[in-house]
Image (cartoon, rainbow, N blue to C red; front, side, top):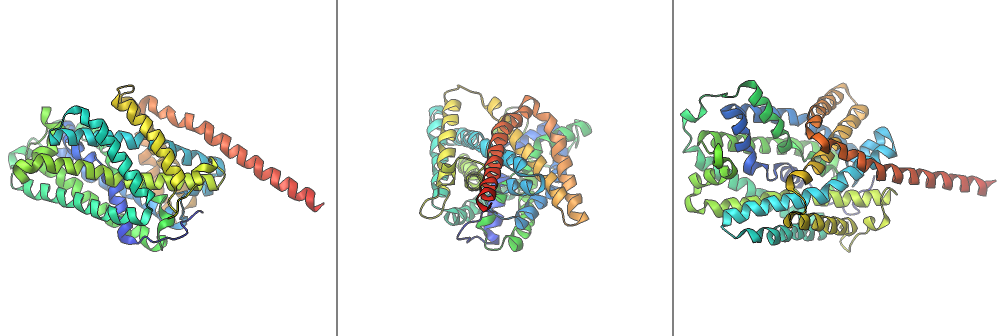
Length: 427
């Protein structure tokens, strides 16, 4: 286990890191997309997925509390299944971030540019500035990043609360009928896309070594965060449906319409700020977690040594630099249309679900009680049901398995050689 030499975070930081990681940019458009598929019954899908996601959240936080350190999921997968599996999960998460981070900044920048009324050519520079800004925040250390996260997540929650409260005055009963125009199939399809709005719990596991008392703080924090996220998601879904802010061209700008009902002419700017804040909050957790993971893998001999470099405040500078370089390249590919968003998004999606599959499987094996084992089994089954829907992207983890296997094998050979040399010296 590799922990921070100066752990300084507490329960409040854990709550905002969890909320920031999970909420993300999905709240901007997913309520309308779900309503397109299921109508007003999409609200039931939101509630069902919030309940289904809780075992995943609790499994991840329980394991992180028992095995704190920068390795996160890879650490407890290694505890359960060996160093090869641990290396695989670590690389899987690590290689997802240079794709996922620029995709998120690109989407947020496009949304904000539209909301602010800026020219389309501003998307690239704004996305690059957002990515660079989050990297710079993490470079100053997790303590500074976590306190900034308190402010950002507070602002996101406040803006969404204003949107929900203001939009509630414009809710009409007639918008809730027919309740399930597409039947149970529509509700199921809505639930499938909502799954992506409830992942992010795994990112905080890599930051568990930054907490003063992870055993005391992480599990209560994840429960509080899950409640906050559920209220914000369900509230946004209710006003989206109740104000009729979905369907046709309205779905792409549904939150702008809800905001307009609450704030009037200021809605565009408020929504643009919300888009940037949501993604910033998510990336503070994900980039910080990925860089900590890179350092942990390097210190365990499962990644190149330069990824283990730290700066004067102890931040994982080597990992942040690598993420910045690779992520910048992906962002250039997106802005120049060298690769499509639809193609690239499959890669981090497959990685994160595979991480959940192996992480929850480790939870089953390492569970100290039947209750925790049952919770982990449920989380594993939920992830397994979603994985086939990834299509060809489901093959991406097999590509990642190659460097993971090679690094684990090299580590095993080095360990065997050290033992042999020690034995020879003692004879």
